[in-house]
Length: 359
Image (tube, rainbow, N blue to C red; front, side, top):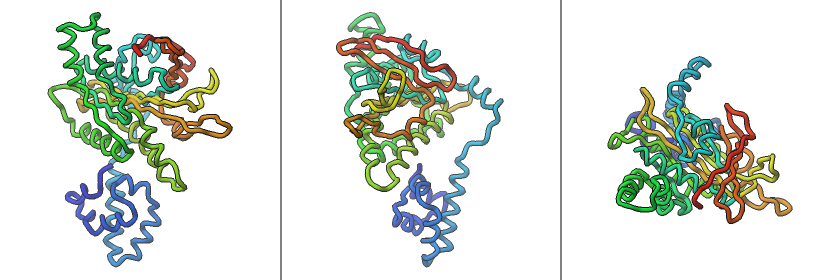
């Protein structure tokens, strides 16, 4: 959320004195404020020489947060919103589209799980190139140098039926021009980028009449895992905040989020104990909404557990975050990805598909 300093101009109570008080308790943003013990903060304010003003500042922040909450909707309004605004974004892969009932559903967070080299990142690159070919802007947050223009070029060549010619070269330039890649190396930098995207969505920022429909974050675990250690709750709180932020972006701005994370210890059971997670968010054009949409891909990893058994780096708390979960697997040396739907909010789980990706 917004840094406290950015609120000073519009809200005089959030002045330099209030900001210094908050900073002394490790609070620099609205999000830090939400994660802090409010009763303890008020107790510290009571012992301060400007306690009355500080407590007024705390009340002001709480009012700001309350104002950000979306209005309550009844079941009929939710149904109408889904029918009018929650469209489907094609992934560019017929097998995945068929499995998901047409593609990535706006307003939902979909997770790609599976072991390393099972095709999750490759799927993200395919989804990015597909969105860009349909005249959409794509935002790619790269945390591990996984973004590959060469792979994008191969997808563009395959879709046109040619490897390279003047027509394909022209299309490739247009596709790559529509994919904006950011290098993100810590969780706080990721939050900064996501909050800026959220502000852009609310401001209905348009660039050259192109709609941003895909946001890819690869991978989120490499950013959050380093802060999950230690005895404090901050790392876990940051992880949960990331999930909440992504789901809010998906729902409030009609974004389809696709992510991946984990593997399976048995063919029938997903336990998030394998390296790799991908997230994707997709958003389509719709009447009366901001002309920006994001598809997000996030990758997660595992750490060693007891008796040599791997366990999910982000823990069981992350398991309930996605609306949809797809398990990717691939035989060694094969270009065929096997995809099993483990969870879906509106479809029966257990459906499977196979797709050939250029790995």
